[in-house]
Image 1 (cartoon, helix red, strand yellow):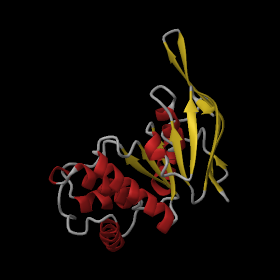
Image 2 (cartoon, helix red, strand yellow):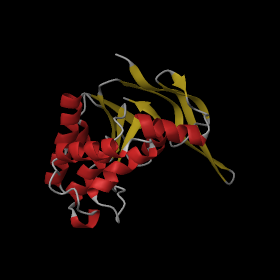
Image 3 (cartoon, helix red, strand yellow):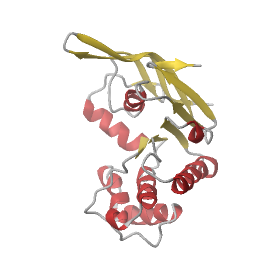
Amino acid sequence: MKKVIELKEVWKIYQVGEVEIKALRGLNLSVREGEFLAILGTSGSGKSTCVNHIGCLDTPTRGEILLDGQNIAHLHESTLANIRGKKIGFIFQSFNLIPSMSAFQNVMLPMIFQGVTKEKRINRSKELLTLVGLGDRMQNRPTQLSGGQQQRVAIARALANDPEVILADEPTGNLDSKTEKDIMDLLSNLHKKENKTIVMITHNEKLAKYAQRVVHLIDGRIGS
């Protein structure tokens, strides 16, 4: 199975005054095409830093980050932004929707940045919102939607440019238990039926059971 993302001996060291904080310590991790991977870790384990590196939001102090075999560890930010827009779809704990825009407009936005034609943007947005069960709520703004519905919009938005990888960072952290299950079932169906590659970051062992493979992050490296 093809490796979509690979981190090789990745270190991230922050300098705070005279103190060095080693957030990642020689992290080795690969994500295979079509898998559902859960990265499980407690607070302070390096989860957020790991997310930022997998998602091309940060560059390592040293080590390699391979995306489709290309080392992107030290590319210019504008190049990384272009890679993110095309290859990675993000789902955040806090949804990160634009309040002044409808669900439909929020889903269309990533496609605008990639130069997708208006007709294709409209059709794709309708298709995705229907896929996540919000075909009747397209014109609602985030404040008119429940937390679970907002996260469904965020999932539709993450799929907008048909990315290679969906990166879900604590995707149910702000949801009640019933809505949590609904969102996890949706992610599981995207993996099984749409063959999407999903990387989920979580501290919740119950959620990690939805994944095909689970790795434990301890003190900035993969543990047992």
